[in-house]
Image 1: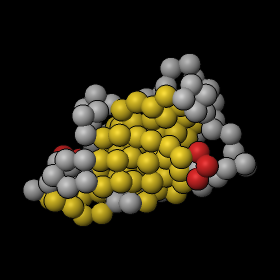
Image 2: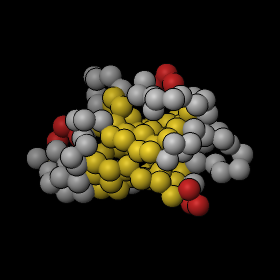
Image 3: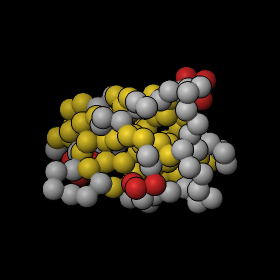
Length: 125
């Protein structure tokens, strides 16, 4: 199963970017789709997720004021709108999907069994 992340790039501090994660439709049942990020030398970090069955979306506290996750089920795409970007947001951003259902939206990477290739976001100061 291939998830496709796109939309990364080089921007300046204060700029905005929208990342997209496209995923297979009918061939796959997904319960949760999430964004993680990983900066060089750091652990992979949860950013945001949507849960289809409960129709909810949520972002990590560290980005909640600036990032918004959204979904377009008809297009099989999940988006991450990132505003007021900071140099510390620089990382490879990965989208991930979980076929299992969890009553609480999972924030641990090991809960997600499908991963995209990542898209690089670089924010210059």
